[in-house]
Image 1 (tube, rainbow, N blue to C red):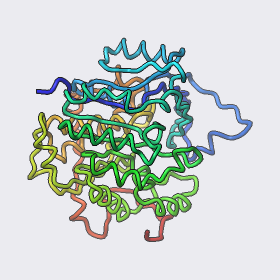
Image 2 (tube, one colour):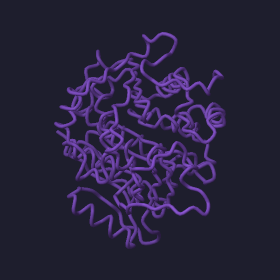
Image 3 (cartoon, rainbow, N blue to C red):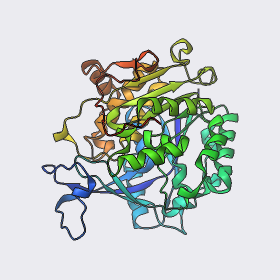
Length: 398
């Protein structure tokens, strides 16, 4: 028996979220943020953010015994983060950095459009392998890490520290998992050759859970550039054809990942698997290989009551938390996809997932009531997803 179900490590921050008025919805961010325009808001919410807090808190809500590993600064934002960690009784090894402040993000999320993040990386730029609690990781069933593009030490020197870390964790007999974030093209991380780094680290990554846009950018960068140009200022995921999505998933599996979850927001979630024997034979795992091996599945997003939406911040992390929890519980791939998609939807109704996010029993009941079938992508004809809104703007085949 391992001491912990999961160690969640990497990027942690404080998110500051302006509360836009719910009676005003937009179809484009440019309708909201215009130079010289005054925008009234209904307040400001502050929460812990980043993969360490979001995924860690959600997994705790889902009855997993988690340990958090990250870094905050010795500043007033860090003191706020430390108080929350203590109040939520979250176990962990959170380093206090003296040289840099705590990472924080301004999350601009008007109703009706996708979020914009203004991120100050702070002391996350100093977080490296010397901060990783390998002893505790060895006592856990799962190690989940994110987000490399926001952690400078893990992409320098062609990702040497990232690869060394995942290799060491795998040698300890712990299942490895990684989440990603979208590199800012204008920043240092945006100039990094991510396909080259991913080619080296994915063979040591058992589970990979990027968003659709992230996966396209790092696995098919030329297609990403072309589709982004076609989308203009609209959400790029609406312009990615299903055949391109299937190719992305297969490339991730071919790179060495055993289980790949691609989170696609309102388009649901996609799942690819290889031979998962290496995962199922690890201590504390009980995945049925006949059910999990060599699958390609899609689950549509759960319906959203727009009047109940509070914030989309952290929805992808919460979806990943539910997916990983389902795997730790020995669920089927179909159920794991359903847990991921309903958790991502439930996150939209929360400002503070620690206080407001439904737990595992409530999600299980929700899945039984709100029937949301899982589709086998290999059996689809003409690459069409049933029930998905077709976007006529994108016409060119990638």
